[in-house]
Length: 493
Ligand SMILES: [Fe+2]
Image 1 (cartoon, rainbow, N blue to C red):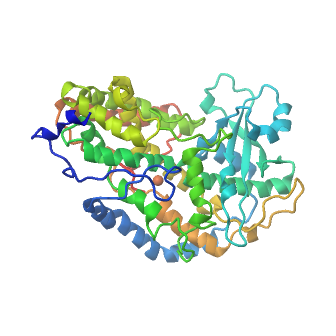
Image 2: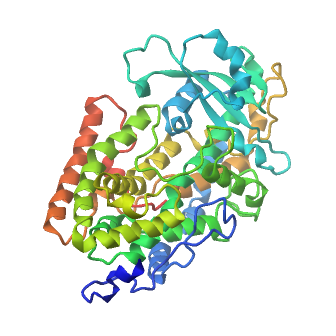
């Protein structure tokens, strides 16, 4: 297979002449997490240190007074409003967790509620993987799942656009709560919001980051700089490798076992279950369809909300047509074998990636390239934007110092005791530094280094399509979850 490689062809050049990065098993959980790239070229480390890394340092020092002040003034002092709770779970980035019911054993506790509305359409949102987290003394977590019901009378409306409402919460697999059980319900909502925030941070969002490290490294190291796929991807690959390895392996990471890390807002040590949450998101949880095993898909997963329509509109209207133009050139005789071998290498590391001859199908390669470029720019960044600004740092409840509901009748929850000033301070600092988007290079400013004139024209078409998609969203009255002008070119936060 390797005998056909282009090594011997003199006019090809490589970004890191045959000394580039490559994926390997993750030392922390070789089977449970995506492969990691540990050998990062010094040029990438230097660039990261002078930009994103410097930004982190400045934010974590100069941002201290602001975080202290915000922690004083921003406490959530009333129980969570039911309307806001439902809207946030079903319309924000949390709507990514909406999962159609499949009749699995995990749904049994909802049976009395489901029976009450025959013919209604339900979804669940599963936040139960947090059960493996052992919190610090005085803090609590609880596995929760919510039942979401479509409001009646929306038959002609597109599924994604139908209004939905949370009608039940299950805590600890069998305690069923409904809004009528006011005090226990209010208490349960805190743990749902906690589970949703951990779900975004540790099970859902990581799959937009880490499986793409193998793609990043292999594209930089295997493809010559003249290859059309290299020229398409390279602007989308900046910052990602040092960022991802920093999150997982740096001693200064926000995910830590070192409790005095003053900006770490989580409720437990990394080794006390937080890493297992990553595994739940990547390996899946058997018997729970809310935690499917990660597999590379050639199109983004369907999300049952306007947020899903927003994400998919960009994929279909902008990224797909552009990817098709690149795929057509990448399958021409000069590049075809290199393209095939690129996919063989990636498929070896990433489950579901179409390896070998599968990638030689133009439609398949088109969807794969569209998914990669969509994920690294809009798909990833929109999660940050929405997660940061639709749910305030305090409404994420990453630390809770009140107990989960013990039964259907419970005492009113004491909101002043639920979260301490220190918890809010850490969260404000981490939120501002790591969760909110800080854009270094923008998607709309990319200057693709295409050498084929056809692809230069396709790139111009792509930027026009991006603007048209944003206009289309406005026409359709679909919320603009992230302004196009703010979307970064790559994973940089
Ligand atoms: Fe991210």
